[in-house]
Image 1 (cartoon, one colour):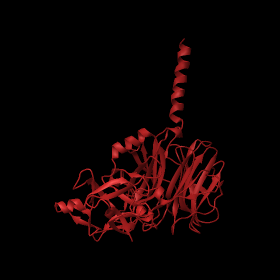
Image 2: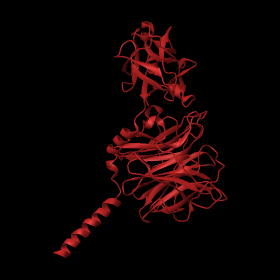
Image 3: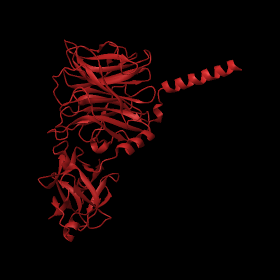
Image 4: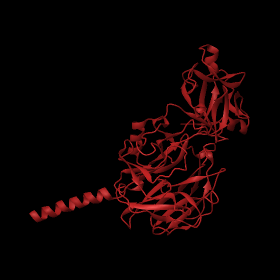
Length: 454
């Protein structure tokens, strides 16, 4: 009997160990988390701490903690870039990041920032790990589980004395690492690798520094120097880096994101594919996605419903909203010189596009738009033109500043805003200036349709 009890106890202990080390089922993921840092054209929005946003569809993102950092490094340069979130085999998370505070890319730094987290509502075990002794940088980490080795690979951008390559170190605990070795050096300089393991295939997406395009490579082993490039070059906009590959939670498709590199251009572009191995990427219309505000060079991981709810509960969602144009989806409603406008994002001051949508000043069933950076000023029409004026509490002002939200005139999933005191007129843009006008044509309807987004 004692032997039987010991055998049962041993079996129970073994099952517990296996349960801890089993990879979480991807089907359990129903939402997504995005980790990033922030910059804006004049660096008005620059912050080199860890920022998080969440999404339920993987395309439209809600910044957490009012788009402030949830944790900031306390050693090294005291700042980070290029944060990477990996769900480990035990179901918890590890966060890796470049140790660089700002844009001094000439710095030599051999370290990465590291945190542990159970569910991204708190961060523990902060440390820096030394990856090499080379006189170079350690940028843009990505990590993956190598089942054949029984270790995680940490891959990062470095210079080997001759050219820009990807290096790799292996680890089991993200505290001690093996000696660095070259992981990918295809004969031209490369930057910003992202690795995703899908079944028996390892996918590595990267930037070719010689031509500025993004490419995908693949391997059946994930071993160093085992990858073959299989895609054509990709780019949207004028410059691009930091490819970010993610499989959707439904398991039916893939997204590839690319950072525009320059904070004066659109921060992110995206592609989709139903077959990551097929060299067939389709650029997504910007109506389909909205990156986190001012986000730069991040990473995306799948999370469960419980983790999504915990993140929202812990960090909170923005107290402001933005209005994205339906027919010019790279442009947002903003004020500039106190005039209502539609301008291409990003811009500074970036706060010009942030609005508190409050109950209508003339009718609480409607809405009014109060400026975040000029509190007490509201969007109102005057001679049918939209401008930002201080509330004077007159009946005329309250009526001019009140709109009624209705289903989008060009897309019922979006929104349009009917004037309270001129109910035959709607908020719309014309030559990028905002007005209230009667709506008749398809162009008018598109001009008057907006997406409310954080």
